[in-house]
Length: 400
Image (cartoon, rainbow, N blue to C red; front, side):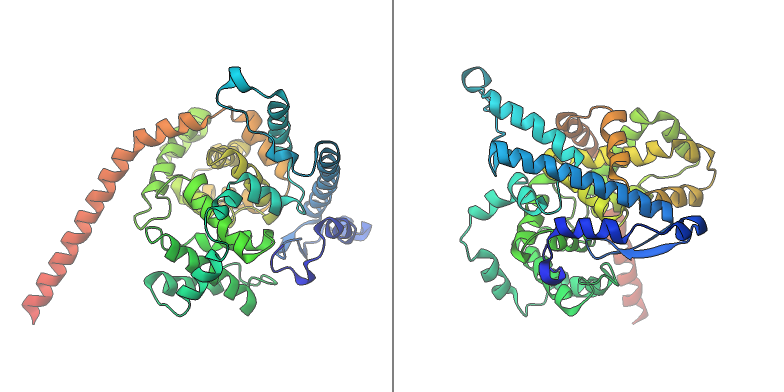
């Protein structure tokens, strides 16, 4: 874990924190609100029930870790890399690889042990392969080349650094700010079309907390933006993000028709909450350990996971949402729900078992269907903006 003091062994840390977080009987009776730090350095505030949930979750993580260790012992340290099945199935189907792939998908949905997360993310996401295609000094050369350069992106990054998880034990320090800045500035020069977009600061910050090195965090950010997520999500006009929001609205209508109809009658636009979910990949909304579990699946199964999780959040609060009659009430329900979703299994069980299947191919077709309308809307918006600017320029010229 990059940036964690003394880089303590996470498996030991889990065991220690399970003991430290166990509330006394007096605390349970009083039902007091408590504050504590999670393993990623975030201050968590909740009631004793929340603490008990976290204890149970961490115990499950420890048990899940034993499964991973047993597989490494029986199949080899990098067994999860032997999951590729050739496209020419009839000629070269390897049953062992297919079995590994099925096992791996099931295991990842149950959670990757924190101590294994950096190497498994790096391998399965494609980040390791992407890094291998460039010279070994690529990242250090990029950071040296961009040092001291000022652009619109670097100015926005500097503005956002102190606002990225303020109060965090490492991120909100000079060292943390410097590391996050290097990753974000470096990527802004690697891909000038993206440059920098607000939201990426939160994503990169969590990657720094998980990965073993700053450079690995950079490559994880690169593979996210270039391979895992849809194109143009973070470009100037956010066209990809607008497409995702339209696709999500359609999916909400199909998967949760009662909620969708109720919200439409209220004239509630789901993008009011979902835009931040998709741009920040839930890093600002869900507790950090729940976010990591979502990202476990995201890096293996792709961007369709974001739709599964977003739909699950609405589905889990269906009864409450149907009783809401004000926009503010809907936002409050969803924010309270996400901020206290300490048990990732509750969320992911709904996301994958109750929402139903959604293939990447199906979502890709939905995106293509929505793209023309989005581009037309963005073009009209740009024309109106240019017209307003022309009118203002004309008015100023007359007044001179």
